[in-house]
Image (tube, rainbow, N blue to C red; front, top):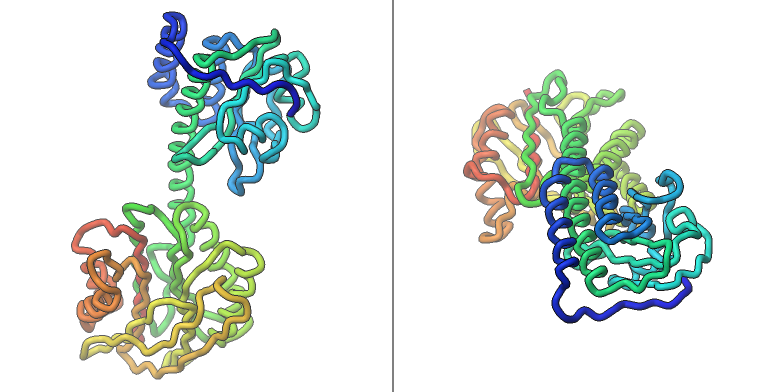
Length: 410
């Protein structure tokens, strides 16, 4: 960006004209736009901004998920329809500069350098004012207006455009959050069916409850039979919450199933899965327990990637936590050692696997939570075991996701 940057200082009382503009802007942002979709909302807001600020162009650019580009999402007053593939790198061009500074920038005589922003700031635009869109102090986008005649933007102009950006940011974050949660719920439901698969000789039950505070996250469970006659049983938890965690969870779940087709060694499966996470999900981390039942269902081999230990359930006595040594979580350290534990399973015995949302509480130690859980798991069917576990929630919504899986040999 070249030209003379000016950011007028605010001072004095707003004029009657600016007060009226502020009133009109508040009216349209508070009511008329509340039911629109995101792009329509931004477009309508920009159209009103052109009128209120007597500007000739207005553009809203939103930060992409990686935080490296501003994506042109809505515009008003341009000579041609907005091309949605316009992406401005952070730190480059006018909008990229506003995003880096995190504060308003006004240019009275804009010297057009061309490049990627040419479609957003056509040659007829002489003066430009840009402000950041902020959410909790974090830049989430940039909104800028331009005029075809030279103009020195006032403090009132900046205040008004910043108000537009603030309202647009609130609406954008709210709609993104709603869409992300809806998409995460849909993905979670598609990957975690409420009805477990039917496997001869096994009684299987599952439960899943999303967290009240963080919403849907990366907890998952799975039970599947393999061509070798073995049965795979897994539970895991991807760090984080929301759509991103759910997407990562889906990819990890699918990859584990693929690796399980190639080897019956759970440590080998987790080793391969760890390499996949390290290579293709570099910012992800997950815990998991993967267990493999032999074709006779009489022996189970387990490996843990940093997950809480399963419970061995019995038909005529309380269950017990397995002394399963946890190795490092997936994605934690390249080349982490993976070990296995092999145990016999008699008829009527089984495994109960769970995620940390079931036992973690702010007012108690994790060990106390584990002891309370084991004490609640009385002998019974897999469904009865899951119901007893859900009873630990005391009828309240958990703060974190809770996924449980009970498998009992018939």
